[in-house]
Image 1 (cartoon, helix red, strand yellow):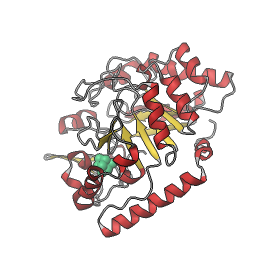
Image 2: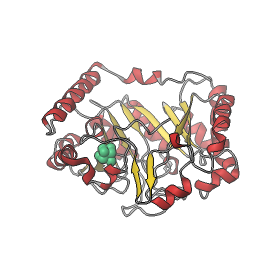
Image 3: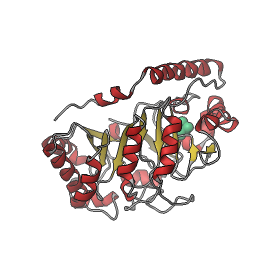
Image 4: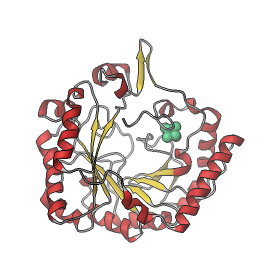
Length: 338
Ligand code: SF4
């Protein structure tokens, strides 16, 4: 296995971005003490949504289930260029994914190029199914810095238990093809992560996941705990091994393990832009219930320092548990990745 550390990210940290990160860290600590939001600087990372369309129908995902109430669409390169220019002073890390499957958007190679033109590190998470030879050739012209393959089963039965509408052979051949071409072209990018959400139905395969990752030369294998929304889903999907569960489940329902404080660093270090320009606080706001502004009418800086954003930060400093999504969130609790 080649390096499991993402050293490539260091190349995107300029003096100005480092100074911004120091300002963000400092203002967050002051806010925790004063219990009121003070924000110096801008977020160093973003999730920007290429599309909220998906080719699968995973049962715990609002996008795949068709349960999103917000419009469906595709991020266009000219929009993304505007976003990239407006955030590049302070940001260096862009996740080109949020809801949906990124490679449904045919402009992905162009989006990656635009990000790199603006000196932004690009991470993409995919189910791998759409990665045929043509798409791989197109993205390897200017490869993303990191590519995460979410494949949660090592045979058809375990895979299709959750990834409804896909097959293990399609998903894994996307990863195999990418690794083969990366090797043949002697590329150092993308950093490839094989991500596996641990469930009752696949927990017997964990040793095999690491062996398969090693066999194919991926940089890193990550086991993730699963997010669910109901006791029924918890009973159906959560693994029997406690260390791969983020919830305590009893007759009354489920709650995240560990204790929350009334704070959330995510509201200082990161932000999310949907395909149609809405700014929402974090990746847990999948259906954009907390729209803090729109990139179509304001600059990111105006939105970041606006009253809606500050009021939302204040609401968490007052009482994080008042928001349902914050009660089902692992921010500040070290249980997300094993
Ligand atoms: S869900 Fe709430 S606590 Fe979690 S990251 Fe988002 S705003 Fe912060």
